[in-house]
Length: 139
Image 1: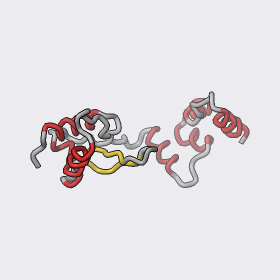
Image 2 (image 1 turned 60 degrees about the vertical axis):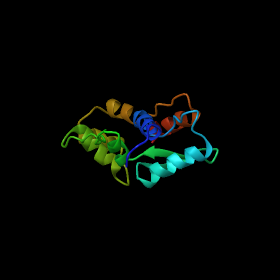
Image 3 (image 1 turned 60 degrees about the horizontal axis):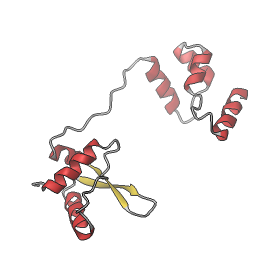
């Protein structure tokens, strides 16, 4: 599909967005024209519906094909190194039953106070997190 200048600018802006969302629409692109542009991009597989805003509008995200259409290579997620303490901890945390602090310490060889900090809530200003943290320490 040959992209129009408007389509290209929308895709390029979405590619720069942290969540790859189409958010920067030109002021002159409204109503039927906007719908026509989004429909053409969607039919070509260059964008996909992402979610709905509180107002009920659909948000769109650029697809892999959309990135390729503007000459960008989609980034692959970073590979996890095998056999590291981090990889071990991630696998333990993925288990349906989770992992206890004692199991984390045993699996990694870390001191308990170090492993404890890794799972500590970072929202200490939130009373719910403080209560959860106190409950974790007393468990």
